[in-house]
Picture 1: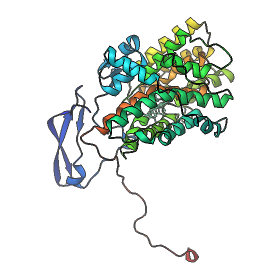
Picture 2: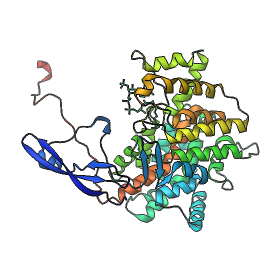
Picture 3: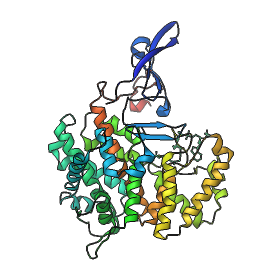
Picture 4: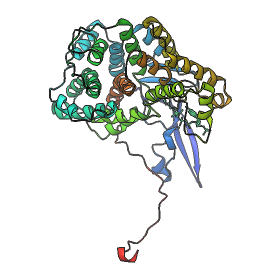
Length: 434
Ligand code: CMC
């Protein structure tokens, strides 16, 4: 849990003829919040904030974002530094345990994850019962929820040992679950994990390998995926993380809370945008549209199209992850010798949008999803798996936030209020009189 923020001043609020003093608290990066936790008790009023754009739901010590300056840090460490020097499992440890692991801790963690990768054999039947065209996000969410049925011994969110076991199981098994979703959709045999590979290599083997052929992990691809997972690993109180926290606040087990987070991520305004971006680029190519024509459509009120992969609730400047991914995109495609017309279209769209008044005025920049799909596409990942890869990367962040929730001294079940606008008291009328 975060060191509690400081309270140095108060805000004054007048409601009718009543004046109340509300504490103003300041976080470690100077962000200020008016603490309204006593507001209803003292004034009878609640606050209304559609989309929660002005609402802080918790205090957190995990991830810091400055959307105006384009800063992202995990546990204080800049994302650029982690992207360059770390790896996904180390970053997972950092997020979940709060500090960089020493050599022994990293060794223990890596080994533990490496030895929990296998799924219960009955998961084959579980996947076999899904339609072939089941979206991998639906399959992953269902499968993560189903882990609770296979591991009833580790479901208590307040038992330190059970939490540790379920966390390791989930991190270890998610790549296996995700790759099963893919294998089922293409009718190929499910691949058992091969713990001789590292975490990302193992995922590649289960996704792209088959039992009939030798499989060699391509180092360029492995590194690219590891980088993408690091960049997706946490992003403070976004929609899926808030979902995970809210669902977790009912004291449901880890698997139930993360399963809900996966569904939240699936939506096209959130993680599902990475699939939408590649579909958008392919549609522009296939319909012979120019970048300018599509940008005009995205701006038009008469058209529901948006420039997918652009815009962000918090970043009003460049998303630092998008910068890193754009560079990685060129590097990876270059190293793999892939020529991607989709990348050319993406670059053209970005150039047009960044000079267009509509996007400039609204401070809409490329986000994490704009270029990631081009990399996934170039390494042979089908587009309906993109969001599942996002989920794989986001897993340690969701888990870290869920753990932090449970150690929060202010822990309460999440239960927002509403302003009721329906009919006032009405009588029930017998059906024959209606
Ligand atoms: N294309 C065209 N117009 C846009 C776009 C876009 N991508 N994004 C925002 N706008 C416009 C929007 O129409 C509105 O215009 P107006 O003020 O005239 O009504 C204005 O910009 C503000 O948009 P908003 O929807 O009120 O902003 P928000 O903070 O509620 O939504 C967003 C943020 C990310 C959902 C939105 O920018 C969007 O839909 N982007 C496309 C989907 C996308 O790329 N999502 C991934 C987000 S980042 C990673 C993640 O969360 O998974």
